[in-house]
Length: 115
Length: 113
Image (cartoon, rainbow over all chains, first blue to last red):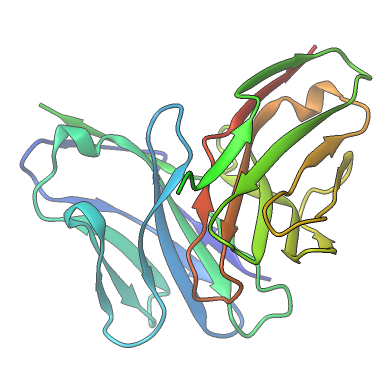
């Protein structure tokens, strides 16, 4: 079975500082990994994904994520946080070797960027 | 493109009532799905469809029915509402294939009293 862990319910960071939102996954085969962002009272928006190739993936709004197969991690990063980045962030995984092939989401991390 | 639309935005039901949550997309996506979002639990898949006439169960299907008569529409039916179904419901769509990201609707906040 596939699973995703987001070990931090809440991350606080000062505006202008780098931010990291952590994600680890478990799959039996090879993963496709996704990050989504949810602003208050809105649906989820796609940020970026890792499918294959370069382990460093760049996405929307200056976000990037690094796929680390040995640590089974896919942490979301941004060099300089903005107050407008404050939102709920979800990591998701799909095991492309599995039978279900559905997305499994983590529990979410609330990011607050302090002015 | 309107993207993925959902109606209603808010709904209050009494225990035992039934209702249908509507979802439509105008991107010609084959894959559509319904999730529920509960605090601290992320999104859990209820039902999904890979094309018109084809549906399947997700992680938490009990108490819900779906059908897919057209590519565009994927309604979710609550057969007999229970307080445990109080949640925020999201519909999503994508091209069919593991590499494709999903596009989400704005959600329906359902309260069952």
